[in-house]
Image (cartoon, rainbow, N blue to C red):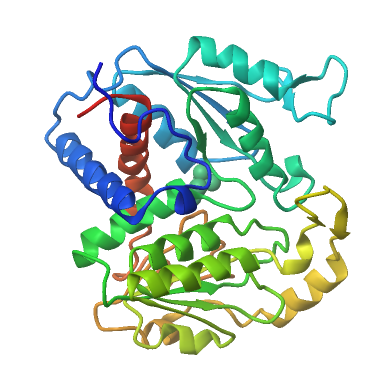
Length: 359
Ligand code: CP
């Protein structure tokens, strides 16, 4: 079988491991698969007989439904391995007798019978230990020769970012010269992952957009991600800035993406080399900064500041009445359902290229 440059590759830290050209290819393929879907064309030859295993350690509507439907539209099989119904896969050093199974054994076994393993893990199943879920996926990748697909970890949500870039391309035709603001938005829940904002700013700077990250004090993202965004902006001749002013982020933006994420203090931090704990969660401080951020709700007043063609994006689920008003998320500038649909086409592109041959 002829293959392509994507075949067999993991999709874990995709914003770092795939080049700009590869992201553009994935967007093109997703658009082609979306066109075929609209024309009701048969796509079942693309992954006929191939099997995707999924493991959800967290809840999900969009990711679960679009992966399950997507693989079947490409002719493949889908099997959800529910933690609790299978032995829970555990990293070396985290085994519990007859409850968990070492990731090495799980990964090597599934490699023999399927073509990819998709995993979602962040937050409570990873003890809010920042980076633990990402490392779990990499432990799978170490032992499975088949692709490991990140369905959201504690660092990245590359499937969401690809669907979002696809949505931007559809709405504006391209990326260069567009202003995108990823803004914090208030939520009553203090514990939320940072994967979406981190992936979106990485992908948008890779595409060469002018990116603003806007958040209140205490909601800083991973410094390594910020450094990479600065590098992307420099390499792609776009721009990147960080501000702490809610309204300022909306001014002149073509794309606004106001969404909640956890304060810096809602995570535990470890030394990546030694595994030694550097800093514990501080719920008191996370609650304090969250109270101060109550004004960060997107209303018509903020939307009046965006470019005349500006759009409102959100990955969903949204906390209505906290992150955003009904008027905005249900309003004419909102593209949230387009983004959700595009998860299907984006993930089909990822699967078609990493699990299959040429289109
Ligand atoms: N945006 C997103 O990943 O949605 P789910 O949590 O429903 O999968």
